[in-house]
Structures are given as structure tokens and as C-alpha cells.
Image (cartoon, rainbow, N blue to C red; front, side, top):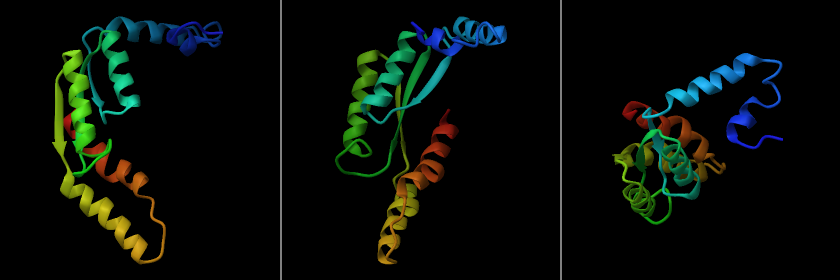
Length: 139
């Protein structure tokens, strides 16, 4: 059984594919100071991800998308939590305001779907059409 993340990445193929071990070792050696932008909602998953990357020596920045006003991780409340996490770690935090895009492609899509008597899938559209493009543009 693997004892570390690196072991998990190379186990059990390290003996059959030595190139895998070399790639993992090279990535580990080159990570010190490598800039990584982390999409940060303020929730547990993204907070853990940025903390782990920071602890491993990556130069991390938090990036939060402002989707809409309101309560919850996708809204204003999540931005405050994300900013606090970055402040506690001493790393930069940026906010990209995409409220208009979110309303146009997700909120309106959801309302129109319900009005038409269907059950829309806003999260899959949001990831594809709204979230990843602004984050990629920033990075």
C-alpha cells in the first residue's frame, strides 16, 4: 500500500514503468515557487487544495468568481471565506466579477427551463460556459 501521494502515483507501476517515477520526481523538484492559481470558493475542498499546494512549496494565488449576491459558497459569503483563507496563508486573492454572465447563461437558463416544464442542469452548464473561461483567462 502507498504511504504518500508520490507513492500512490507510482505504485504499483514504478517497477514496470520506470518513466513514471522519473516524471513524478522531476515534477516534485520543479514545483518550488511554481505559480498555481487555485479556483477558490471558500469551501472545504478548494481551501484544502490551496493549503496543500502552499505547504508543498507552490506559489499559490486564490481566484474567486463572483457569481451572484446572496448567501452560500457560490455567492458573497463564499468570497469573504475565500479572502480570509488567503489572508491567513499570506497569499494573494483575486475576485473576478462575472455576475452578468452567470445571470445570462445560468439563472435565465434555469428559469426558462422550469417555465418550459423541464428540469435544467445548471451546474454542468455553469462549469462549461461560465466558470472555466474566466479562470483560464486570468491564469
